[in-house]
Length: 523
Image 1 (cartoon, rainbow, N blue to C red):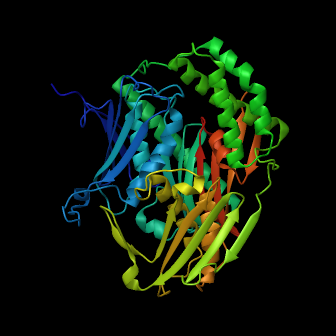
Image 2 (cartoon, rainbow, N blue to C red):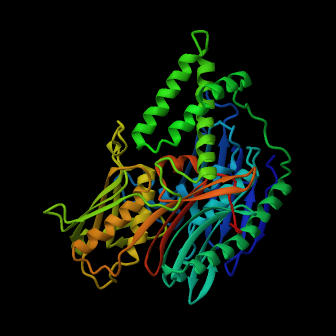
């Protein structure tokens, strides 16, 4: 006997009604919903393993968003006439969902979780990416997979001076700003977007408008969950603990971690010192220590390192490399370092360096951007490359990873706003090769790209710069530190990574990721 489907309907802003239904499709998944607005229908499913893999010490969440060509009545143009690997738009949408969902899971939850979001019917006027985030959260809401709370995503645009939630494709063409925003009922989780030199006031207002609409969507998810009758989240196996071992690790390493952290050394010197201390810690446990003891000791060491460095920054207002909180690393810039490319620039900020080239081509060189609902050509292309030697590592080279696609997209959107209009006859390709990285390599790409475009003679309106901001907060006493131009370690240890690009006159691009329970609107 088929189960009874449950659904909720609601309206956000001036758009068409949205209906979320569960219990009809993909019933063997832990959670599955279909979301419909107009002719746009999205299927979102989530499945989690009941037990973590043996030796698992991180949270393995995978998120894939895919658009079926049949959703728009089309056949794929590839040789085999079937959907292949995810294209850049699908990767970017997958990353948007992942970044919003990841902080919702308990820190000690280590089971594999797979979120699959599929566009099964498209609408030429409705953008599916923000709806995909809502659908993914709703699938988690109707499952028994443990999450702390639900989220939703909306797109906000400003058209003719008015802020619009989830605008149509036609409205987007006339917008002066466009932000995708994810939030819980109380806090912001993720922001990504672009603008034509918008003001800080416009950015804040867009966040407020988005958060009001997100509240409606979150309440709809709670209503659907109540209709389904899900009362409890599943129990899960928590990692082993050993308080006696924890105290040993603390006694052996606490003071030494602090001394290394405040030494103000370079990235590799600091990393080597921390690694040597970890080696000494394991040796101090003696021959009787089991593999489990050693693994736990390494975890406690990493946790203690995280805590001590954060407290040092918050309490003493000094950073790992000795800078003040608002101090930018030393800058070095050079244009035309390469004789043959049409334009080139070398931008160095501390231990982060980008060598960027610009090539001018003909209309025949335009990039075909193909998706299920729409195919278009782009005259402005930006590729971001992050080879392993930039961090002193050895890794397989297997094409651009999702991170490279995401960082390149942020840089492209930031520089695109200052590019000449449609009458400019050339196709422009910008390539950023990151030669060194210790944080903010995407922002180095923006700066180097701006220099290289002007070096190539492109009528680029104004220079665009970018910087990554960080936040370290302590809930026990509500103290916090805002960091300018963050290091890679500060990104890893911090609560927020907030990249901002713009000209002297306004904001061109933003990307914000929150790694804790969110950032309140009051902050």
